[in-house]
Picture 1: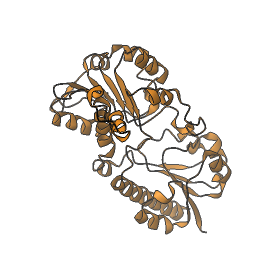
Picture 2: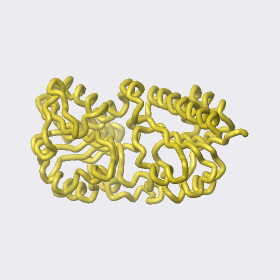
Picture 3: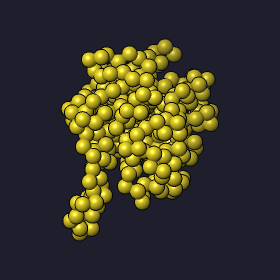
Length: 320
């Protein structure tokens, strides 16, 4: 029997990884909408995907043939794991691929890019030059040397960002459920970290416990001169409380590669409140979840997840 596989990453999927998938059956490399996924999911034995599409209970309930979801992401909050288990669908991801992930710094690098762009007003300054102006006076920024960088979540990415902070001459402190080695940085409780940090950067997985972990009370504990950086998940932050904090100048700025409602962005036609605010306020900088979107990262993760699916499918076939 020939397997049918859907790769929703489409033409971006690395050529080397394509060859691996094509050894497993007939593969459709195509981007798809949520509505199209609902209509077509029943045709496929396996799906290779990333963030953007929601594999919820309704979708999985219509996936009569589906046996594998391979997601080229560390997080799986876009997949209803309980529903997948109920329907006998195996979910494969990158979270446990420590050897692979330690060599992928792209999201940590993007965190630093967002931080520098925000505190040095790089984007609005560049726009004025493009508009024919040459006046740097309105764009005075903040130096990083000597400032305190508070990192929430001290896994792989948190540690990378910590090293960048040290290179810039910053004092680095961290908050994590696990003990942070003193040689890396000083560990602080969340409330203390928020109070003393000039920069707060989020690097935790989205779980029921971490959803909305930065809300009204947490934002009020931050310095009025501090900025918040989020390259993890949008739902870690209560965006309504965040907007209030920005409008009342309780914090100085926000830069993020994620939105709480990013999967519904197209349906909203860009009408997200935080996006609307960013259009007229230079203290908010948003990018469309491109932290891991580098040529090098794409190739490494695509090959890894294709090979992981190959091994899983062959094991499943052999045991059938």
